[in-house]
Length: 116
Image (cartoon, rainbow, N blue to C red):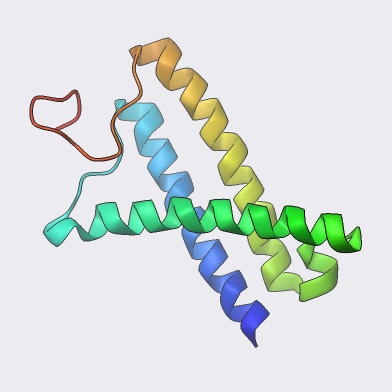
C-alpha cells in the first residue's frame, strides 16, 4: 500500500540523515558528494524527505489528533518516529557543530571551503 511504501522510504531517508549527522558530528563536514554526486544527492533528498514526513505528521496530528502510527500503520509510524529522532539529532548536531567547529558547512561544497 502507499503508506507502506512511504514508510519504507521514510525509514531509509531517516537512516541516511542520521548517518550524515553522525559523520558531520565526528568530522565537522557532511558526506562527500560521491561518484557522480549520488551520495550527496541521496543525502539532500533524504533531508527533504524527512522534513516532509515530519510536516505530514504535524498535519495528521492537527487534523485527526493522532500520529501516523494510529492512522496509517506500523511501518509509517516507525518512519514517523525515526524522522523525529533524525530531526532532534540534527538540532543537537547543529549545536555541537557551532560549538566545536565554529561554522556550519555549506550544503554544496565550494572551492576553498572548509569541507572539500
